[in-house]
Image (cartoon, rainbow, N blue to C red; front, top):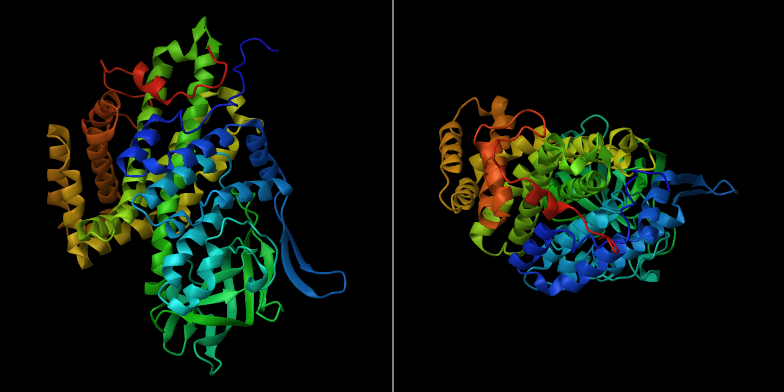
Amino acid sequence: MSSNQPPPLVDYNLFTSDAPLRESLEREGASWAHDLVHELGALAGTEEAINWGFQANDNPPRLRTHDRFGNRIDEVEFHPAWHELMKVAIGHGLHALPWRDPRPGAHAARAAAFYVWSQVEGGHGCPVSMTYAAVPALRREPQLAAHWEPLMTTLDYDPGLRPAAAKKGVLFGMAMTERQGGSDVRANTTTAVPTGADGEHLLTGHKWFCSAPMCDAFLVLAQAPGGLSCFVLPRVLPDGTRNNFHIERLKDKLGNRSNASSEVGLDEAWAVLVGEEGRGVRTIIDMVNHTRLDCVIGSASLMRQAVAQATHHAAHRSAFGKLLSEQPLMVSVLADLAVESEATTILMMRLAGAFDRADQPGEAHFKRIGVAIAKFWTCKRAISVVAEALECHGGNGYVEESILPRLYREAPLNSIWEGSGNVNALDVLRAMQREPDSLSAYFGEVTSAPNDARLRRAVEELEREIPDPDGESRARGLVERMAVALQASLMLRFGDPAAAELFCASRLGGEWGHTFGVLPKGQRLQSVIERHRPHFHGEG
């Protein structure tokens, strides 16, 4: 073995090595899911599972539009490693846990499990997330929910295009955006023509970005006679024939390469109305809010894996006569990354807990604004965290044999999907204007922390700035400060005391630079790093 090379980070439990996650699972009322998350954590740390992630990305999906006889089939073929990843995710209920077992803490339990397993490979989380998120939207039509939900909530991963009645389980996707509008879905031109039968329509048009097109059914936005509406569109009709859902090409993406993303054409594709005609955005927003939560979870997952890799590397790699983990400047960088990861993990779990308690008005209002705030900020922070963690490895972090390049390519994705940064920042402004109770819930949450002069000053500044009539042009800065204040409050209440002090002194106290590793003097850093460093089997 080469000298001065860190041992591979394998054979460790991603759950037991993650103190902020363990503490959050207990705090958010999901301790009953300990065994589930522990089992996933152990599996995620195995060499076999880690290899699945590499294999699924090294062998991206392939599109087959026609069979050898020239018949249109529109099928996507995946590497066996993708199916292994999906089998574990579906088999552990990551697509449906709160709907299968709606006990207190179910969303938090599912968030913890999804966060752990996503560290193995992020791309396969897309259909898992969309299936989870489609259920509340479908419940707007009890008859449709009664048909689909039993198959959406089984623990059977059953790939392949067949009628729903012939399957043990199904996956759902969504098709919203079009080439001329992107996030402006009201500019959609796909048409929905009623057939005369109850709720049935024929959809014709094009969708510019449809991820996971191998799913069994999709929620689709289209222009009905009464305006933009939401529809459920199956890939295979009940009689076994393929619906007129044609995959035109797969996208060649920066990252997320294991997952198929496509452009699709609809040619009088059969679909059924969900919710009220003309209120498609209102209907599908239930799905979007749940997938936005998953973008936060995915970003937290990327941060955690990056920090685990960086702290592990530094603990075993020497330079200039001593370990990297003992060198003051590297210690400052690692501690800064660890604090960012911890704050994001706690925020992620707090939001999942709000989904669990959404029947309480205060929690529902906090969820409304909190998800948009967190989606804006944490997804952007993930990019910086992963880049800095990669740099901690030097050149070794830049080669594909390490996981860091894959994490780096994946990191921008969550900031773009389900609404880019601008969309979410403006959504926060819209929530404050249209639902003032959401702003009250936000301040109630932020001010519930123990008295801290730095946080109090930050809150006072926010209260002065929010009424600004020119707020739209300054929305990003405002939402950033709202996010940091929220994280600071959570860290003061629930985080490691040393990490909480470091977070507030740097992020709120003005003793922070524009790069990681610029921290105030006199702080306890080593204990923060050790809290986040994974320990694997056999390590002394």
